[in-house]
Amino acid sequence: MSTNRFSGPARVAGVVSFCIAAAVSAQTAAPGTSSSGSGNRPAATAGTTGGASSSGAMTNRSSTTGSSAMGSNNATANKGADNLSSGDRKFIEKAAQGGLAEVQLGKLAADKAASPEVKQFGQRMVDDHTKANDQLKQIATSKGVNIPTELDRSTQREMDKLNKLSGAEFDREYMKHMVSDHKKDVSEFKTEANRAKDPSIKQFAATTLPTLQQHLELAQSTEKTARNESSNKSSQSSGNAGATRTAGTTKGR
Image (tube, rainbow, N blue to C red; front, side, top):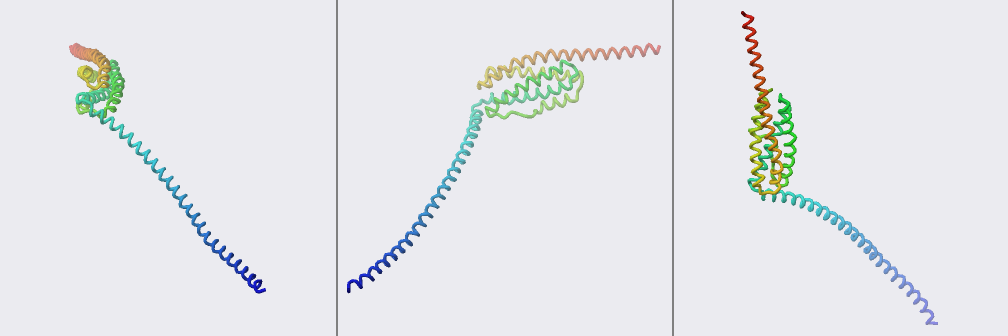
């Protein structure tokens, strides 16, 4: 009997101890679970941050690649300019200046000339030299050479002079200038076609030279026509004046 009395309470105490131990274990496990969950959250944040960093790195790489390409193009142009001889560079600049002058003076002649032949000549200068100027501009750009975009002082003075003239007087002065100018052009392009060091410039000079020679021949023949027309008009004016004076004298008698 003594043994049975103590065995009951002992069993109750064991059950209570087990329940307490289970509760403590549950409390201990709960923080661990929470910690584990919160640990996963920073991991996700880190992944997001890593993605943003990767995106930024890609953007930076793209910008760097674009900048490198632009720098490469500039470097190529600068290298072309450095490799260009002083003679070839001077030819490009002078040919561009002359081509610009031919176009502007040609436009003036096509508008103001009295003779149809002079008008036609002026328009041909505009057409042919505009085409040649475009070709030369492409070469200059590839070589890193800046070409003029405005008339030089000498051409501007000629423009101002022609603007003050009209009729046959304008035609004579314009064609006289064209003959002189194209003689210089033919000589300079012929020299560059033989002596240019850069192949593309040499080819440009050689292929443009025949057109300039045609311009010179046409300028010389048109100048003669302009002079003859001017002389004929002067003779007619003198004849009319003489006839007027004779008629006046006869009438007076």
